[in-house]
Amino acid sequence: MINKDILKNIQLVVFDLDGTLLNSSGEIGESTKHLVKELRSLGVRFSFASGRLHSAIIKYAQELELQTPLISLDGSLIKSVTNNQIISESYIKEKYVKRAIKLADHFLVKIALCLDEAIYYTEHNSLIPNLLDKFGADYKEVEEYSSYHKSKTLEIVFAGDYKNSLKTIESKMMFPYTWGLYTNFFKSYSQKGIYYLEIRKHGVNKGTGLKRLLKHLNLGMRNTVVMGDWYNDRELFKTNAVKIAVANAVPEIKNNADYITQKTNDEDGTAEFLEMLYKVKKKNNS
Image (cartoon, rainbow, N blue to C red; front, side, top):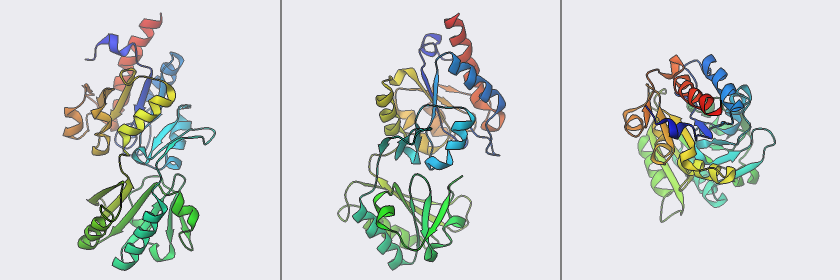
């Protein structure tokens, strides 16, 4: 149980989406919807920190009537819900995007450019929508990767079944060939025999995104709650925020949590904590 004196000072709750706020059907629990509304009336603000594109999380923000800017693409972008104001952006340098495209062509792997509103691919990379596990993303086919797309790229994704080719590309997208990039190579959980390589700006993650959001809101870390379940939430769980893991979270996240819900995301686990927070807030405001 979390100390009530800590809960009464909470001003912001930040949800991870997939596996945390959303159930397996991609829905928000009814109890959570109700409690978000009640807590908002008591002065608590809400936001998301998601690996999804900004365009793929807007509908959930609108469903909960959120007004606080959202963290998307694992911290690459912080953008408002209503007026498209960009609070923070971490674009990859255009020269590195060009390099990535050349490497993909040379090693015959698929490549896509992730911007805040959509994932762009060319006819040559037409398998991209079927290969990527980017929930809720809009995909747009273009004749070529124009200078606009290259200059606004938040994440580069390579996909293919040639593991060694992707590992070679990874080495050529690192120092001394590039500077200031982060690479993430992994095997698909849903596509048999498919591997991915993600490229982002170095130092970009949900944790740094949260710090930038709090600076914008002029809020303290200890006045913030983060809720998560998966490995890309680990940087959130290294901060001094109050850390809540849902019951289905991976062990690493649970081990760093201040509280673990008894319910999973499919049982509206977020509502379990929100109910606890609501009781403390209501009593403190009475």
